[in-house]
Image (cartoon, rainbow, N blue to C red; front, side, top):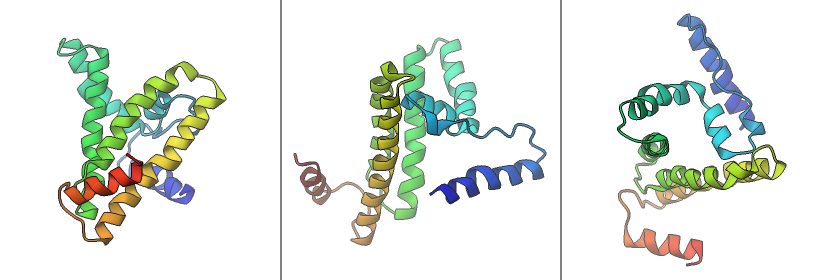
Length: 166
């Protein structure tokens, strides 16, 4: 996990930046110290965050297409779509789990906002990262290994209802 992060977000990006003479080498800030989920998303992948702010958020607010909250939600929805594509294509499985996991982050942002600067906010952030993302990838992998690829089916509904205890 840590070696993969270091290899991709530090070594690989810096090598590419060096080859392309890219001057700004800040790809992430101290996201591991996040006491709110909002801070994590603003400091985790700075090139993507800055692109979304410059090309989606600011134009929507400046052109009065949407207010700040709706522009933020639009950015998150767009990011959730791309996360779903990135996860579902390799597994040949389009279940909207990655999309749902990303959109659940919007609720966590609101829940952790009052905890800014408090250790409990950092604990909630780490629990969501440690439990949420791996669980979603494991569910995709499980479906892929069982041959349950394709769109959502009744078998999916039964499995996830049982899993969630509903």
